[in-house]
Image (cartoon, rainbow over all chains, first blue to last red; front, side, top):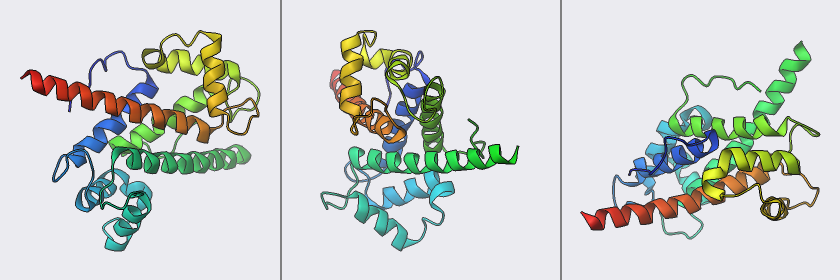
Length: 108
Length: 108
């Protein structure tokens, strides 16, 4: 998948393009090339979010994320469902970093 | 704002960190340092999303985005509201790129 005009992109536009590229890197492996199957979701979680989600090799964990995300119950995660996951994780990270920074400042 | 452990980050983790950094780059300028005021929102829209949103200098456009995003009507955009904006724009971009790629493929 190639994206047009990424040379003059801002930081935020780069972030948006990285999310789009990440999804399509995994969604194209099997079946519908615009959705993540259970196997593609597992590969994406393990490779991209290992630091955040821990042991995503765990079949139960993958099933739980798939169950939470797959709002239309078709066994596939589409791009909108993927963005909801990434958004929720980013909000959680931001909360974590703010707490972390508060603690660092208190140490000074 | 400094983020811990960004050296071994995956592509998706980088995207998440870029979104967090972008928000705090603007939110810290005035008032509550963890929310975007109207002026901070305008600067963020103009600098970061100029290519996508066009003429965000337009006061009406900024007011409209603020009105749409500020779900609790406090005149400030918090991090969760910011992520909802970025998520919605990313889904729109993805749709655009898929259409663009389909057209490129049909040309071949």
